[in-house]
Length: 397
Image 1 (tube, rainbow, N blue to C red):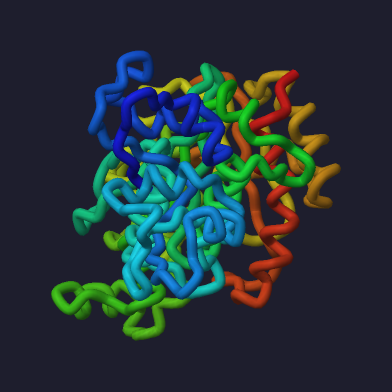
Image 2 (cartoon, rainbow, N blue to C red):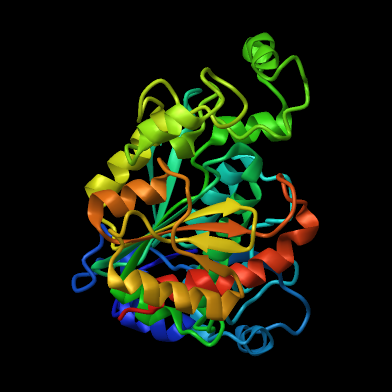
């Protein structure tokens, strides 16, 4: 929602008028000097939409403000030029409508176009979030990063390394939406206040690492690659079990952390729907982008969302830091998921992150069953993992 600065207005005043934390207003307007507001400057106010209201008989700004539980000056600010003492029946004014419900619908087949639309809509309502592309998929789809927060501590979360685990993207996007609602409405998540986290922690999200694969699983093969992909899929037109990227490389077997061990023991020696680690580590644009992101940002913690098993893995060769064990204990306490320190599997993003940075990294295996997990499990998975995601950004030892 946009307003125009009037004489005497300040961002602090807008914060009080609309009950929005001032830090979120400042971060929503990075090109504006909060100490030198110029009359007529447009200011983005997060957490609100503008809605039209048709004047009825007996309406006054005072009665409308009382009915909608907003300040009269909020109406004056949004309706510059409207004569408050001469409202005409049938004329239209603008009301500020606080956003209190999610716009992300995670309980659907969540492909890359839905993700892109949701990110655009979130950015409109929450302009303080930072959006950028950290790379592209094989087919040229942006690997979008969403950043929330301004703190020095950095936590990274990602989802859908594997195509048939696309439900992890809708879980992560639901969490992002809930976190944003908590920030703008000062409403706690599981008893946790979000604003102190916002100021102390920067959270990086890449909700869909493998958009080409997700789209293949949910929408079928693109026409120009149909013949090639069916051949790679052993002649089947059923792609629901596909894990790899569009070139048949398993993106979570692509990282230089005992990659050679994985290469030798994998049965797949050429591109396939799953388990082929590539002809060399970091051969795919998606895995290259994720490695580059981690190197650039030097994250303090990393969480990679996968399915299934109701467990999580957090060790690699004894290189994990002491705080990883503490986090693992907390993760189990809040979710009931089994903590597994070491597993005989390598070359994953979490493995490489621990090896490279000696920091806490986790592979979360959400839900239980056969991939792709059904949407009927969505609510249970989200409630289980919500505690883990919150602990990862607010608990520091």
